[in-house]
Image (spheres, one colour):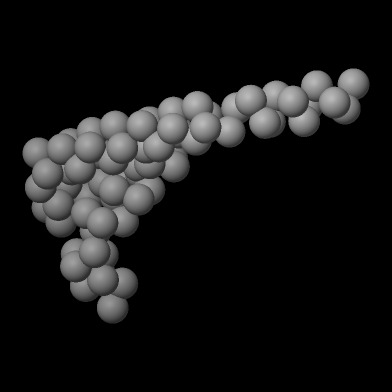
Length: 77
């Protein structure tokens, strides 16, 4: 059951996991590619796109909310 779900949604799970914890998810995905469950080029492209999207999202969040967070932290001194 887990294997069929992993094969069905594996790249989507990799995309989501690579955005939060890239190293562990990429290590797992490359091991599964080595075992023949995933395609290595697809794993590499999925991880690269997920990392770029996550970095852009983190940048946008910091750009939008950094001043308010900085003001809150400065007020606690």
